[in-house]
Image 1 (cartoon, rainbow, N blue to C red):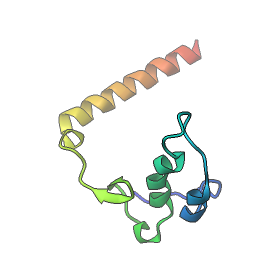
Image 2: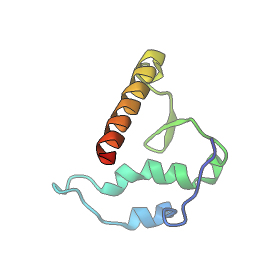
Image 3: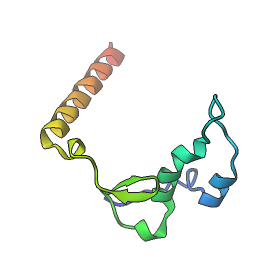
Amino acid sequence: MSKVYNPCCIVSLKSIARMKIYDDDNTALKQQGAATTVYCATAPELEGLGGLYFNNCCRCLPSQEAQNEVTAAALWELSERLIQERIGRQSK
């Protein structure tokens, strides 16, 4: 899997760090939630890599449940069913 760069979404981590957008309760900065996504989308050292799991900008092993093939298949089937139900409702 290769990364696709959308010119509208590429932002430097420095500009994210300068943002002061607070949650409703002012306890956490929203950029903290976006930091890993922005890092993975823009980090040159990750170019050409895909299928990796990152948390707090660090590569990690996914949980055992996340690696469970039965759970993955069930999630895939559920996703397909929900999409088909949604498509069916929209076409009527």
